[in-house]
Image (cartoon, rainbow, N blue to C red; front, side):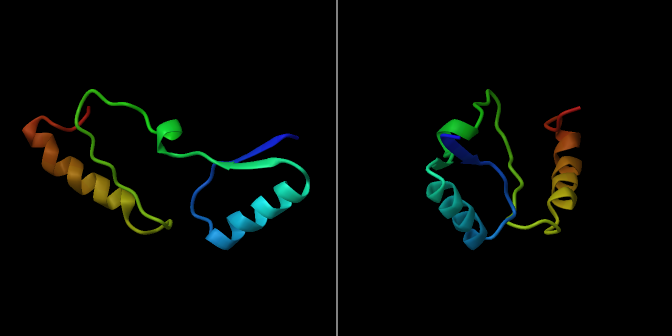
Length: 77
């Protein structure tokens, strides 16, 4: 293995760095992809709902936003 790409969320920094150390000790490159490699372009305005942990209320927040934008014709079908 030459490259290890970490692509997961909701894990502590220390855990990610422990995995990085293991990959490097085995002789592989360890990579965290940045925004330019992971974000998609959009032709319309986008509202992102994110949080650093599970259970923070992302789904409820997204539904709340959708209920308010829907009557204005802004929410997706």
